[in-house]
Amino acid sequence: MAEITMAYCSSHAPMMAAARESAEEGQRTRFFGALEGIREDCRRLGVQVCVVVSNEHFTNFFLENFPQLCVGVGERNWGPTEAWLPIDKAWIPGHPALADHITRRLLSTGFDPAFSQQLELDHGVMTVYHELDPQLQLPLIPIVQNCAVYPMMPLRRCYEFGAALGEAIRSFAGTERVALVGAGGLSHFIGVPRVGDIDEEFDHWFLGVLERGDVESVLDLPDDELELAGNGAHEIRSWLAIAGAVAPVTGKTLAYEAIHPWITGMGVSRFQLTP
Amino acid sequence: MSLYQLHRAIFDYLRAGEVGSGGRADFDVSRYELTDEERKAFDAQDIAALYHLGLHPVLLNGYCRAVGYGRDDYRAILGAHAVPETRTGRWHKDRQL
Image (cartoon, rainbow over all chains, first blue to last red):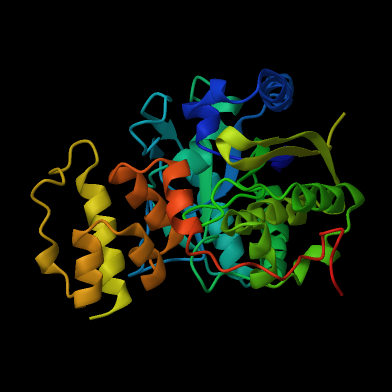
């Protein structure tokens, strides 16, 4: 059976690729150092496919039809969408067998994801995926969530979705070693008067919640309270999905930097599943 | 007509500027059923008005960039229209209970 060999979450500000050098050197080194360690472990552990849970930014869907969840089930997906993102435009290989299995298992366990035979992958997926595999060769199953348009899936439901996702991956009758990745957050403000602000208190609090395994203190957080940490903070939904998938394993903070040139609290948290 | 029409117009305007698209110079906003207020805001590239009309922040962010406003520029413009926040989150150490 397939196994979740590694699981982690990372912020995905587009400037981490588009304006990498704008961050102070120490912050940059610490943030990318955490992702570099994960990349090395990915190779060491022989990861064969990654499942990246990120969020929709009006790249694939618009207001006529906006799914809460969509699984990329195709043989390949295209990215990055943004012309200005300095990552090679490429067809990224998918993993149709595992993606189909995930979709079917989710449907049988109370979730109703949309599916897509071809998704466009924007910075939400591509920045983090590129750090995991700069060659863009590792098969990728993208799962996009609604973290931007009301009404959104409640946080508790996102956590429960993650649990179902984890079960779905583990029940796949393949030999795949899977990396499970959450991409998004932490605090940031987009298109609002507070654009550029970072709520470091929120970020430290949330990372602490993951470290303590105290997700219950987050799961009933109302959206209007969460939004005090920025409208981009809704993207912790992807982090909570990963936490749900690997529970009761807790997340260890590998890096946290409030990087103002990137207008985002940039965190990396890893769930230690294997030595 | 509806706020949806404004969202659709802005979305299509942004897409028109992408590589391989038709460009924004000939963008025909008359195809959308905008109210006079919405049309005026669009024509004037009035981002404060678009903010007040309720344009989704992700689209407003893209629109600001598309019409030449840097982040600090649009923060200054929108900041003048901000409503002071009095609430605190449960994570804030100085939370007023």
